[in-house]
Image 1 (tube, rainbow, N blue to C red):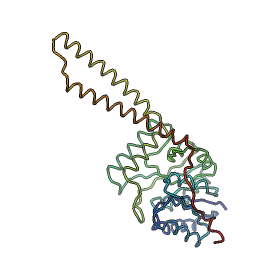
Image 2 (cartoon, rainbow, N blue to C red):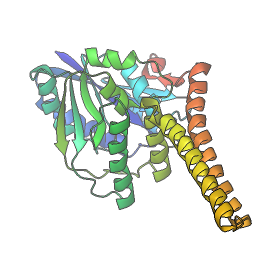
Image 3 (spheres, rainbow, N blue to C red):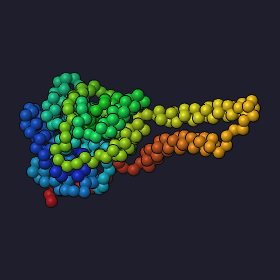
Image 4 (tube, one colour):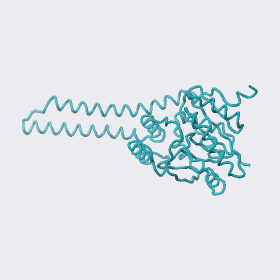
Length: 314
């Protein structure tokens, strides 16, 4: 029988985890020739997520769990789960049931019989999201696909089922600053995309604020493109050229018409404009430099506090 590992990053998901477990196991009961393994990754939750994972493990040994010493982020949770997965095929899902478990049989068939290495999902709608968030999300996908080598489909979710070969390829990328949507596309492999209408959370509240999503999008762009650095340089050349043209204009104006160059307002506008451009350039370089700094420190991406193995015999 094929073992399918389900990696589930969790942060304050005590309400959704039992519902997720029941829904996933109901789908596996319909599938033949497969055995499930659910790995809940507690990302330093402040509620009873860890306790819930322990109880589910006591109830069903096919449920495993990993608990971090603090909150390290969803990317760290996915990485830890992928490393711990023992399955022939590995899936990544959210605990809030916005990733429909009903797609698992179709995903498994695509990978085992359809000649694909991965079955991934994308949302066709963003119903229920604030309009401003939906707008910026669409813009992000357009921008990153134009300026990077990563193949990221608009509306793509982390929800996917991968072969062991593709999973090992993803794990071979040892970056500290991880952006999994980009990594999944960058490693290649044949992927089948399944579309579905957006599903509301079954319980609890989303942990992704607009600011967190904005920072996450910047991390994705920096991780898979150096185009912002070239744009910063191009802006510098443009400003220098514009300053030269303005200097020539005012010099000719003073010589021909004897009209003295306007002083204070002109200087203030020029100084503010140049200062803004310089700050933008320094900020872009600073972001790349900070990422390089974090990579060179070689800190662990996450620290495990407890797993189900620690509770054996207790």
